[in-house]
Picture 1 (cartoon, rainbow, N blue to C red):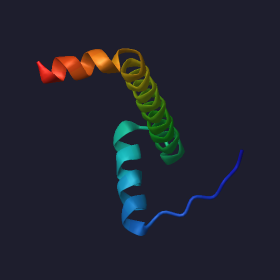
Picture 2: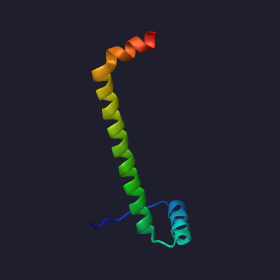
Picture 3: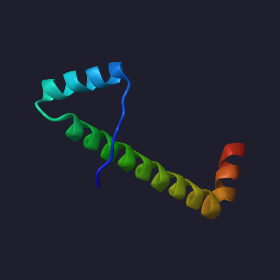
Picture 4: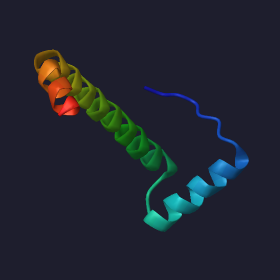
Length: 68
C-alpha cells in the first residue's frame, strides 16, 4: 500500500546517510525499522500476558515469597 511520509529535513538527511552507508534504500530502512518496532511491541505484549498469567495463577505464592 502506498503512503507519503514527510520527515523533518534533519531526519531525512540522517536517513539518507544511513541508507547510503548500508547500501539500501530509505524505504528499506523504514520498513526494517517498522517491522522491528512491531516485533518489539508484540514481544512486550507477550511478556505482559505471561506476567499477568503468572500473578493470576501464582499471586499468593509470590506474595508469600515477598514476605519471607
